[in-house]
Image (cartoon, rainbow, N blue to C red; front, top):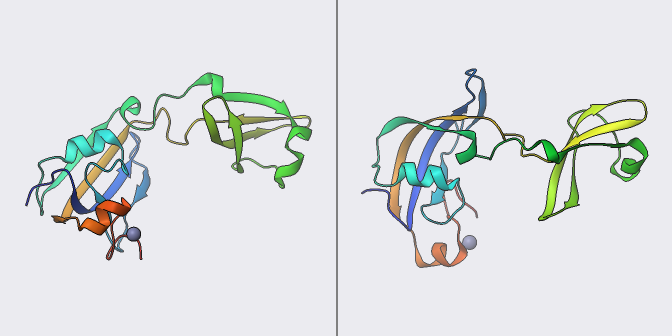
Length: 159
Ligand code: ZN
C-alpha cells in the first residue's frame, strides 16, 4: 500500500543537522504515526513521503526554508531582565510563551547579562537544514474516527 492522503503512516526516523548531530529520533520505541495530508508533520516532509511504501528506507534533506523556516534576526531581542520577573528562573535555555505580532510564540533565553536578557522567538530549528533518515514500517487506511479526530489511534498514536 502506498502513502496517499488519509493513510495512517508509521515510520522510524532520525533527524540530523549538517554536522551529523542527532536532533531528534523515534528511538528504539514505537514508531511515529501520523495521517498523511493531515498537516501534523512538515508539509515538505509529507510531499517527500507521498507514494512511498512499507519497507522503504531512504534519506530526505529539507532546506531550512522548507523545514522550520529561516532564522529571523528581528525575532531576537534584548530586553531588561526585570521585564521577565514573572517567568521564574532566568537562565540560558529557559523557554516561555509571549505575545508577538502574529500570535503567541515560544521564546528561548539565549544570553543573560547583569541587566539585560537576550530572547529569541525563532523556532529552535529555524535556520537548520534537516537531514531525515526514514524507514516506513506501516501504511494503512485511517478509520473514519481517526479522520474525524485528525489523529492516529492505537500504536504510535493517542489513547
Ligand atoms: Zn481521537
